[in-house]
Length: 118
Image (spheres, rainbow, N blue to C red):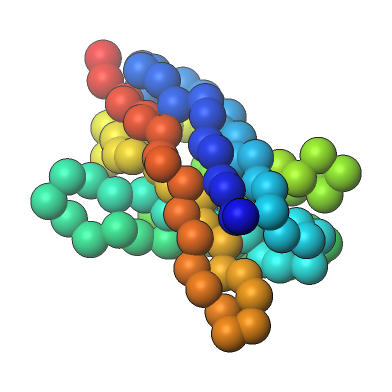
């Protein structure tokens, strides 16, 4: 079955960096786009970044453009989110998302917590 497992969340100071990883299994990873979302307690989950199946196209939320970079390694079935110049407002639980299959079905990881605090 499809599984997504995130890691890399931590407590970091403003201006710091973190790299999140998501390891996928159970589907042909290199055939599907992947995305990162985040959610603050009590708020709607929002898209942070997405990447095409072979990594050539990335999209970012305006709030993270120029600071975050999404990438993927199709040999390792992993997608990454490099987060630089972190702000207090980046504090959230970050989720990996895949939309897979026919008919398509949405899958989420369990989330990894990022806390930006001084």
